[in-house]
Amino acid sequence: MGEGFQFIDIIFFAMIAAFLVLRLRSVLGRRDGHEQSFRDLFKSEKSDNPENNVAHLSDRADPYENDASDPDEDKPQDALEDDDPLAAILSDVWELDPKFDPKEFIEGAKVAFEYILDAYAAGDTKTLESLLSPEVFENFSKAIRDRELAGETLEDTLVGIKAAEIVEAVTEGRMINITAKFVSEQINATRDEDGNVIDGNPNAVTDVTDFWTFTRDSKSRDPNWILIATSSLD
Image (cartoon, rainbow, N blue to C red; front, side, top):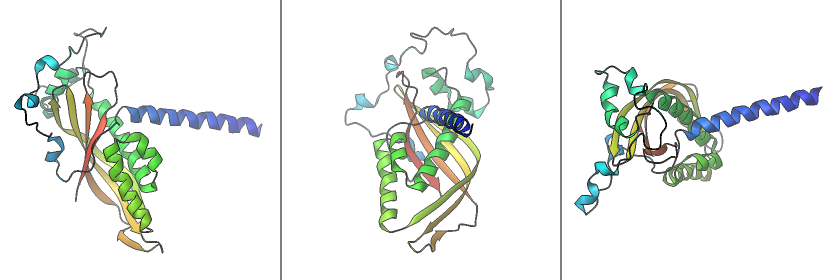
């Protein structure tokens, strides 16, 4: 009887793990690292050839091409008032991807935010490598290596996310870049090899504001969003 219950528990936890992976796949991908300025997150490198800096409308695929859905069906933007600031922010996004759902995006981004913070604090580079771009992963893994070489440990607890919202969206050709703002409560402390606190306070909950930027190729059939930059307000 006991072995039977253990078998059921294994199946239950496997289902939970599968659910988390599916949620994370909707927001994570590959590219950049930590940036110092929120506005710099969307600056792209300019080419010496001016023609390469122009986003041609002809490069944009018909959003309903090879799509059996009805163009007149209800779309996420229909739920917003015309004077809603978010409607203005996402107007160009919906031109490329009429099915983009801001609520669904934010929910997935919140899951990714918590999962990555936990993995970083634990020094779980194997998990991080599967979720981050090579450049972002290199920044995270370097910080983890430096921490380990110094014999330090990081205590980073996400108490909760107080607010999460889309604050900016920019389209570059067929690419969609979206920045989400997270206001969270965290407990952060760094200890040396003797267990002494050398930074932060393990008994204090602080408000932290982060900006994470994601990108996605609107023409790609891959639904993954790619994390291209992160920054925090001190």
